[in-house]
Image (cartoon, rainbow over the protein chains, first blue to last red):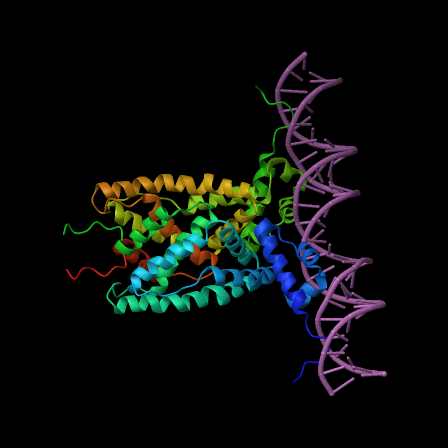
Length: 194
Length: 194
DNA sequence: TGAATACGAGACATACCGTGTCGTAATATC
DNA sequence: GATATTACGACACGGTATGTCTCGTATTCA
């Protein structure tokens, strides 16, 4: 099973991802061209096409590392709902600024290229949800979240709100996210006059 | 103030919008080119560029009529919260199928072209919100919605959830929307053991 | 040493864009 | 009517990015 021939150049691979990441931050995915990536990385377009099927795929790989660093879920001793709160606020915070613009670009690219969408769901959405859903289920166990709600629907709502602001380029702040969480937790219905 | 010279051709204008709309439904905004629009409309690209600044602008104009027909808010006698429920379900229903795909395409285009984003917010988001926000304020008045929630944040959440499914190409059904509305109305926090 | 594979450089056809030119058509003013 | 003014369709142009390909060279294993 020993691979035959010249091995893939790690240096080139890393340089390409680095160049991609830099260009994403500078100009966004919309203006990212494989020409620019190749020339900045000191590589040739042939090499890009050899290893990645599309612009979206390169951008995805370059972005995933960054996001995986930036968004880390480190559980504390709180109850599950409190922990979920903290998680949401940290996501909202991460989505402000450059990282959010990159995410919006990727979401846009996903509308033009089904393969990029597949990568996005498979490498970002699904693993994140696989982490968070058990947290919410634990919340139902420990009594902080009422039973009967589908964890996935909670995530559709909360991440939906964040994506919504992202795509409409509405800047968010902590106060906004507090309002979102308040509605999520308490609902909007008037209490039956306790 | 009488206009001088040959007037703009209404026939051509209508044919272009019709062709755009057809192509949007057939192939989506991602694959829409002004070449195809022009040739299907029997017009020339010059004419397109004379009247619209960008592909996004043409798509927007072609889409707005359709959406304005498809989504009409006709108030009934219910209380405001019940009316808002009906509104959300009708939006979610409209966003299934071709119309939703077009919307996702427009949102994607908005990420590449700030002008398209401006048109989107100005001609679609803002007017819709201007209709719905008073409805929610009425809900606070009539006691169906608790005070203290910002109407705009409610909309960020609910439309966010719908956009989210749209952009990730997750098919929705009435049951899903019921779950969303349940969370929105009642929240996810466990009741204090009434 | 040779087979196999990756590499950078660059050519090539294709597609779409945005602009410009041209001859012609339609309308208002004189 | 004649003329100025504007819109129209057809088409050409340069620019940019794509995806595929070929070439000579470099690197690794057998």
